[in-house]
Length: 339
Ligand SMILES: [Zn+2]
Image (cartoon, rainbow, N blue to C red):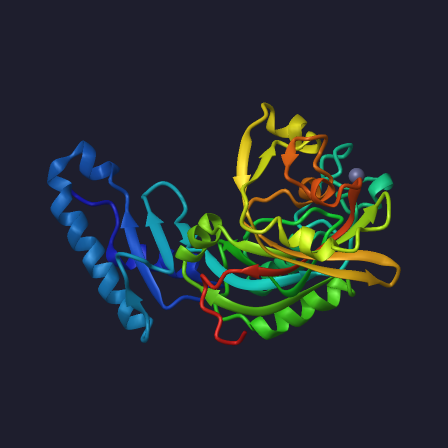
């Protein structure tokens, strides 16, 4: 069986396809179709591939073939153009969300389905750019990638701020053309575009495992909760709130998420620290560290008896969460010596 290409032809096609990509390691895939229809083609194909590999290594000093985790893959078949697949880049960091209007992830304007229209001022989104976009766009521009995926360790409600050391996230950049990117510049650019609504810290390249780590993470969180109380708090408010610590908090699905989650389920969560801060700037403030997945707004109000016990229960007055700030996410899964 005669193989229809020569090593020089295949090399030329790969060189053309590789233009504009930055990579140190690569692998070549040759179409299996020929070998499938004609087993005698198997050996010549293998020889062709070896010859192409040797030639490319001569042309590209400093680059290596990596069969397991190549940065780029070239798939060559006789009839179609060379298919180039650049492996994704993963950038980890933390964000602070300083605005109660900015959403954490993209909130598409449904009327135009994100395409942009007059009523969303041609942005395709409600409420302006999200934290996700503020960080993803500069990274995408820096890498010349195709698309990004945003993986964060949970997400605060739009009306909550994320303060302290911020919330860990990983941006996955698919199809990057450039891999040596100036992360400091991307960070500064994201923070600049955030215009005081969001800022970004500690960008660095990580391995793919970071996505799984961050998705599986269950982190305790500390919140500063701004309360409205129907009556002045009792003199022993501090002790009463301390009493929430260590006892099981039984939470049925909150009324506000029922339409999304469907059936009501029961969660048992825990308060790990509880500190009454008293009045700050005319607001009652309470600081609470709670187990992953605790519904804080309901822990305050009791949600019509669906969360027990609650702040309202232990104080004996109706209580409501006016505003919420996440001040710490207790997680060090991606090593961050800088913090
Ligand atoms: Zn629109």
